[in-house]
Image 1 (cartoon, rainbow, N blue to C red):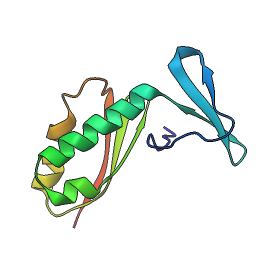
Image 2: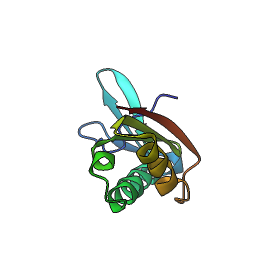
Image 3: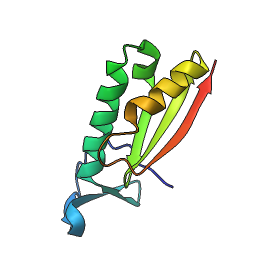
Image 4: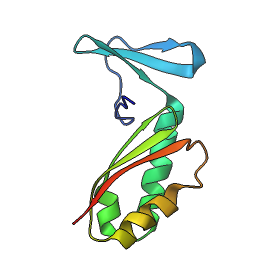
Length: 103
């Protein structure tokens, strides 16, 4: 999986492609940005924030074709499990790539 930051906003060279995706060129590489991934990232961030755990609001969240990758450090295995539970039922989530580490 080669996820792009779904919060990435296109600048010059943006164009619409089939399947409702935007394509930009950055540093000589083409990046496709799917609006569904943008929405999924927003839902994930909102769900993590709703847990009330500050550590979950500081995670790196990336999405690509319905796959959500969580990266960062959490204080316990309980909080790691809480993060997964908070997002598992979100619409559009195809797969969770949990790369959280416990401190």
